[in-house]
Length: 454
Ligand SMILES: Nc1nc2c(c(=O)[nH]1)N(C=O)[C@@H](CNc1ccc(C(=O)N[C@@H](CCC(=O)O)C(=O)O)cc1)CN2
Ligand SMILES: Nc1nc2c(ncn2[C@@H]2O[C@H](COP(=O)(O)OP(=O)(O)OP(=O)(O)O)[C@@H](O)[C@H]2O)c(=O)[nH]1
Ligand SMILES: [Mg+2]
Image (cartoon, rainbow, N blue to C red; front, side):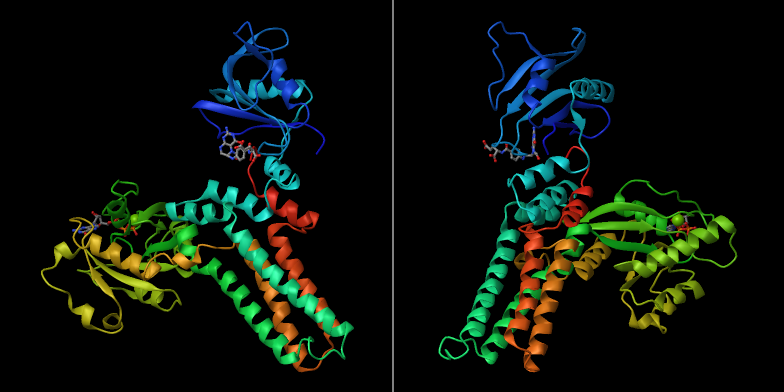
């Protein structure tokens, strides 16, 4: 933490502007060494101001025209001195500037190292650092809102509340151990059990939000499956409004699956077109079909596409055996004059069968509305804005398990001082969420998942 780090903070590729961030004790001097102001009166960086000038090598060779900002610690993103070099956004330029920084003794930052420094310098707690990354990776507007609430600290505050609740209980437990004869103030087993039940429910509720908002946060996996030639790829194209997938009248056109993000009125969906199912297929196609089946099995919703005119086949029936929500799409309705007879036959008569035509677009909006309704129910759960990520959910679950175990042991008259150990453990798990106490391996696991420059 005593050295100075730098990284390209903007994505690779050409852009209008590309930023290199430098953080650490030498940030200012590195900036000063590279920067040359055009102004005669320039006497050094003014904090939080953008200075216009040139970046040059020590030999005086021009590297780029740039804007440079200096933010002195501790009032900076990392809490250390920070210099930002706002260059032109070209990879060669940014690499050259990076090389100049390294010449000056700066070390290239590892993944998440800026955020890790911000955390270690007390600029933000662990859950908020993770929220920054969740914000960057947010696939939808709703995901932005979820990450935003976390970044603002609402989630951390709720976890803190719960931890204080448990710590308060811990104190009462200690008092009861130390003054067993003082019956008035001592925590009776029934009262302890009730308190544990209440805290456990609150923790479980918060943990449950992870799953409740999953579709909104990550996007639901919706898989187009069914026999060859049913019109799966045509439907993908119709939904996207562009000819993304190859469509031909030849059965077995799609071999590899194809995933595209779609927003259904704000609900993010990962729509996947798969290789059509059939028996007699070549090696490549068979491998594709295996993937189709795997995808259908892991989907949040399968859209079973059936050629309305030809009717379902054995492969379509095989998809019904899976324990996955499924809608039947009777495609090519433009080819039939009325609802085909197979609609009324088992097992199809028990299924939701939506009539549509990828060709004419008929029934498409209705189908998308049903898909959205099936996945999202009544809409975004407003009360569930405090959504733990996987790591945070697991910590909550483990804290909850300690409370459950405590209640069982309480029933078996396990002494309070022994129960106290479990309560300590539950508090510790909650403290790991905000990073109040977090072992090095927890921190590394969190920040290693970040990108370089973050
Ligand atoms: N150019 C640039 N844009 C950026 C960032 C950045 O580092 N650089 N950010 C990086 O992720 C995000 C903004 N997050 C930031 C959070 C805190 C501070 C900061 O300097 N805080 C100080 C001073 C606050 C003030 O004076 O208002 C502080 O909290 O004490 C800067 C950026 C998004 N945009
Ligand atoms: N008339 C009509 N033809 C359609 C419709 N949808 C698709 N087709 C035609 O059906 C044929 C197969 O369409 P695809 O979208 O490639 O079918 P697929 O299910 O992706 O086929 P595979 O990739 O082989 O599994 C093409 O000739 C399409 O033009 C429709 O709604 N009406
Ligand atoms: Mg296809």
